[in-house]
Length: 566
Image (cartoon, rainbow, N blue to C red; front, side, top):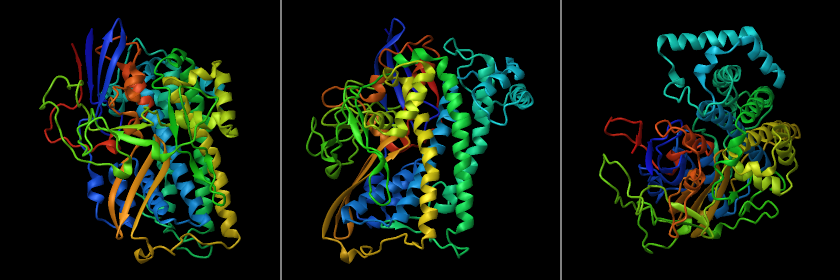
């Protein structure tokens, strides 16, 4: 029995440690630990609820918009505020393009290097690469000259020993299966995606004033004026530019991301049977209709991988446990706390750094263990996709059907590392195709003379009840995000955020149940314990964001990357 430690997991946001036991070439036990503390909930106490969205953006430097919208929805829920349709549409566009950009960045810049061997691309024939690319897409850059140029750039990086973002990956690993031409194609699109994402996220600059940390969110609506006749508002010219950016986003997803995803997946079909996880899936749904309020992606719960029934979500059934987390509850061990009554009282009892292993029989993480009716839940694009698919969502069913047919696999393949990676791409595709619809709704509304963007009737705290409680949900790129708030005398009495990576990265709970990361690693084959790329494949398929679940600092300046084997 060998035990390996990967600390920290790289190409994620934040600090994550994985400890795993290996027997006969497979993982038989695993522990997910985050070793830095987050405490912004404590900072929020006593502050104005209308300002909470601005503070919660700072949970993370990546997941900024998502915390804004969840926070604002929590306050609006507590105070029974209904926002104007235009505000809902603008929010949908902001959150939608965030979703699309985030998924593309994840696939190419955070996850692709688990499947793509960059050094193999040096051996590729550019003409054959162009032929391969043209066989799966009519993207205009698919030419021998273009791919030859990319290959020369890559050779220059290698010659100078300056691999930059391509450094420190497991090149030449036996688990890498792509031919050189596929590797060169993926490398080219990795570089293209860097430039593409800088352009499409300009939508946030137009509608949010900046990115990251947009400035125009507001309890009751948005703080961005709509006026076709003003240069200082969202007018016809800006709407046209936004429309062009949304079209550019859609084209890249359809002609580059999805073809690449399918091409890579076709060489790794064995991963459709690896990384299944806990088998329970939670999605809050997202993108409310500006008139009916019905969400474009439906909410729901799938239990035990059973796609024949979608269960409703009841926020009262959510609780967080700290039996294996470095926190203490006034109610004691073995009992969960609903987020409205949640506590953020740190109590570190772990080993003193530097240490070899965490004491996984006791407390071993700064991440709490959220549970739904005492069950661990996986959240993220796979959960969102499964709930939508099982709910009869036409756009999702069409996208899933297309991919399953292309790969010649059944729906059971979705419950895997490969399925999780594929679901992210399909979520991106469906959202990218819907963004022009929301843009058209906004153009039509403004054209009819409706310029309302904020409901200010309950802006003044004197109109609020003495006490109020609310929750705000958002289906973020990484999954179900919830903010819960209690308000008393116009100030925040308690605030708790249960973020996607809290659900997925959770340690054991009071019953000893593993969290989704931990369970998904069980049974994973490890070809080389010294180069555990297989752990990265499954963990990266969740797209961890530990900065949202904990806070990160490095006061020592010591070694930051270590893989231990014993």
